[in-house]
Amino acid sequence: MSGKEQGREEGREEGREEAIKEIAKEMKKSKISTQLIEKITGLTKETIENIKV
Image (cartoon, rainbow, N blue to C red; front, side, top):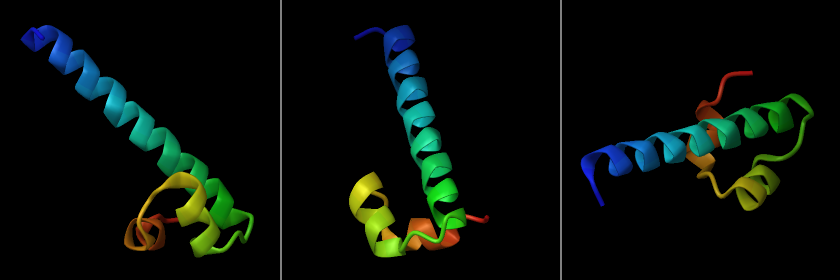
């Protein structure tokens, strides 16, 4: 994989992560439990708790 391709893949992965965090943020706003958010998104409890709503 070239450096350019690797950069694109890293960018896509960062974008996916940010999208998942945005989904988790909306779930928190809807009062969905941290445990359920963790199960659905795959984010850690610590990461979810650090998301500001």
